[in-house]
Image 1 (cartoon, rainbow, N blue to C red):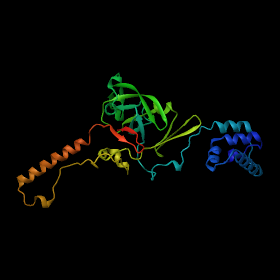
Image 2 (tube, rainbow, N blue to C red; image 1 turned 90 degrees about the vertical axis):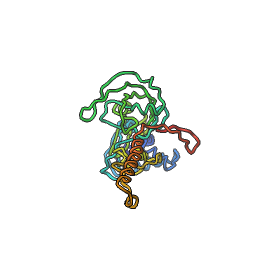
Image 3 (cartoon, rainbow, N blue to C red; image 1 turned 135 degrees about the vertical axis):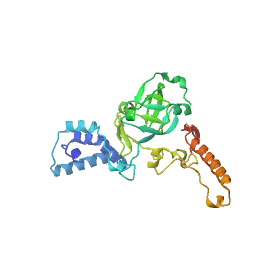
Amino acid sequence: MERYLGLKQGPTASQVLQRNPKFKSLFDQLGFRPQAREADVVALMNISAESNPHYFTAQPQRSFLENDNAIVFTDEDMEVPYSDHKRPLYLEGQINDVFIRRALVDTGSSVNILPLSVLTAAGIPLSKIIQSQTSISGFGNKSEVTVGHMQVNLKVGSIRSLTKFYVVDVDVAYHALLGRPWLNKHKLVVSTYHQFVKGRIGLRPLRIPENQAPFNKNEAHYYEAKFYTECTGAGSNPSKDFGTYLPSWTEIRDLSNEELITIVDRERKRHSEVNNHAYDHPQCSKVTLPDGCTVYRL
């Protein structure tokens, strides 16, 4: 607070302090009226003058206060209860007004990526894809060739804009990947540690937190799902089973070898069908909100 209190006393300094977003936010929370705000600022400046701090001229300080574009992450921004987490940063968003749960923020990607299966589930006509083959390299220089690219109406937090995505026909955990083009376009700063994206819209601070439950029960087989303790309520299969089903001893103790083999083969086939269902492409579901509004969600 010292950098704000080190102003020369006078009407101009008082007005500068009252216009500062930090002081304005404090006064708003306290419910101060204009007269009370003026008296409070004057009292603070008198206290500052008596403590004999280092003084600055009013004009440079006003410029600093009104154009303070610093973006700071503090311990209060921490979304995860433990500091050594390994979570990716997934945001909630909307693609053409269809809600998505896993928009992966990737500062290492030079493109925004959209899986073809998500377009299909969201009901977006594939005819809107501009056909072009572009090779995208990932881990180990493994390349994927795009189907094409398209402009999508994307909303994340309070940011809505037409966003260019490259479309790929691959099975991935995310519904959309937001790379540097989207981040830099909106002047956003990412902290995967705090699980937050921050920026500004004009002079108004912007905060976009993580989605703390990006996976539902049917998606627990994805590797990254183990980093989350919460999941959405959709689906009934809590995890993907591996290996061969083994019945209990009481079920098989009186059976012959042939009967035992038949039971194991039958159960193995049934579990295989259940597990294959867990890898189905994303499905768009119709959801009615408590206020009566109907939305579509992946």
